[in-house]
Image 1 (cartoon, rainbow, N blue to C red):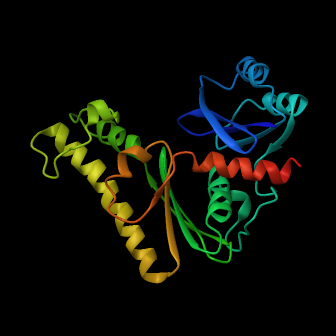
Image 2 (tube, helix red, strand yellow):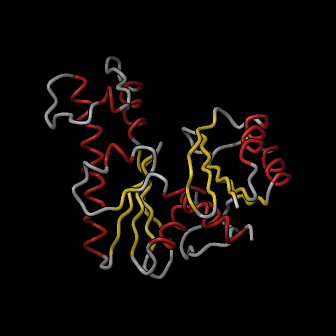
Length: 246
């Protein structure tokens, strides 16, 4: 049994291949053109597909996926293993729904804080009663670097690549580049640590998961007990697909 989980985020379009409950590979898609999707379907021949999208994707691919597989589009109407007792469920991003599902599936009975490192950083809190009660959203790493270049006259753009940004940036920057690195990367690290401390002071039986595309930058920087899993969202999508595509 093979499943393709699609995650259309603000920065990247991705797909993950699951076979018999096991994660096999992640694929970066160049676009959401029907030809691109068709080629992926031809290669992998999935039994089931699920789509999480926070962008205005090509609507025709939903019909395409439904014709080629058991298909489910993630939304607030999706059957889930958690509830949303506060706010407006229809306004919660599909990516956050998948993260909540993964938290409850892999860490049941705990107060879970899932921190997703992407275009934005989302803090997603699911309590021990399997209720998603909210969290926070702040700018991600690339957004912070770009904002300082765009909204100033002379600050350069620092690429958020480990080979160019550097893993061991100095706390006290000694030139423009290292000042920007320290401000962004150390700033995010302290932000994450601060959120973890604030939640931990309020809740016991507390668990933290770090995930998303920028996980590699911060998993080693955050000196807290965390679980780091870059594929956590995909695992949540797979669990939701099994529930909604049965």
